[in-house]
View 1 (cartoon, rainbow, N blue to C red):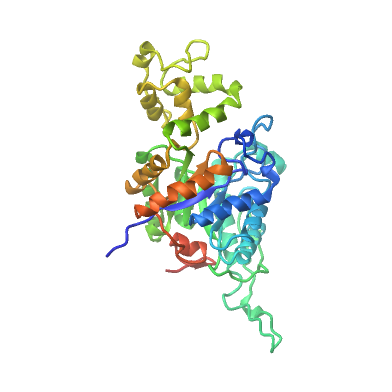
View 2 (view 1 turned 180 degrees about the vertical axis):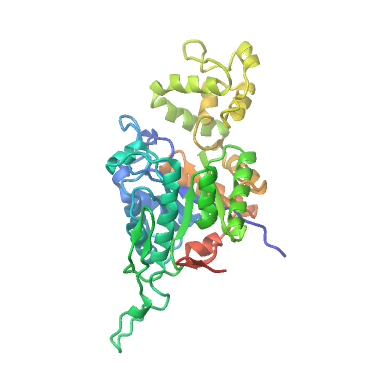
Length: 445
């Protein structure tokens, strides 16, 4: 009997509060969770209890949003946050984003491989380029064009992988009787030099149980697909509907084949946000509450919603607690420039108030389900069975109870439907992702 294919789950950690940047004000939330590593550990342990394949931390080396009313998007430092988690967990994977544009390959290789050894083979590197001008200025640099950034990324990843493999797998001898800690004949410099980066090597670190960290990628376009197809075993993507998700996943698989790889060895994780309640109304009320903390944002949200459906909407011309007036609804259409627009128009046509349409997350950067655990599970099942993704990077609205709700309510439904595993397949991230062992630049089945 052939086992049914199962989805994979990553918990996106954000900054300790959840995916909505006003979540820090919700009752029960620790307002200082940003600096409280115990909070990260607690969520990671819950995710491990729910058999998530990994936790994931995105990052930009800058302060990308106004901290007057909102929290940061990312932890203080992704690697230190993961180190805190690594010491308190056993099997869940630990994936962080670090830029190929503003980090030397040697530092990247050393940090990730050290954490991989410390965690016994559970680490992944989300290798991304950085175009943010504020990030560039933090390094005394100017933003680079896309072509340069991706050329640097290729060099960076190649040098990092070579450094990861600079110890032969049996170089660490630990021969106490013979007095030989390591075989230096099997620890060699890499001596790589490119246009942007170079490194002599070797690293001062032996292999981990999975050989080396798993490489992830995030970013679209031709350059992103090429980077992913050549190096990545996991890809974080941001599609808004099944059709575009399926198209992106197929493009990733085709890119892997072009580089001589098995397409099943690259997994796509679609971003997904949720608000769980005992009823759909309870789920929506969570989001209404979050919106209420920042009333000054409502006018711009209403205006943006209008642009999505071809209308000029304003809090001064429409009552946002009522359905869209019939005369306006008749003129509304889904903007072809925004893939979120069909969902927004669908909800407006159902007669929901403008506030509730916004509460459904139609202008969020990931698809949103506000409702019951069954509704959340149904959404994940539909996308997965449609071949739209290999798994999901799930983002709770409010971390303090959202992670527990997902683990305690949604995961059992997915498991009962045969869509999610009940036990970890192994101890390393590669085993739990079902991707090949890799060490240095060589990849083996």
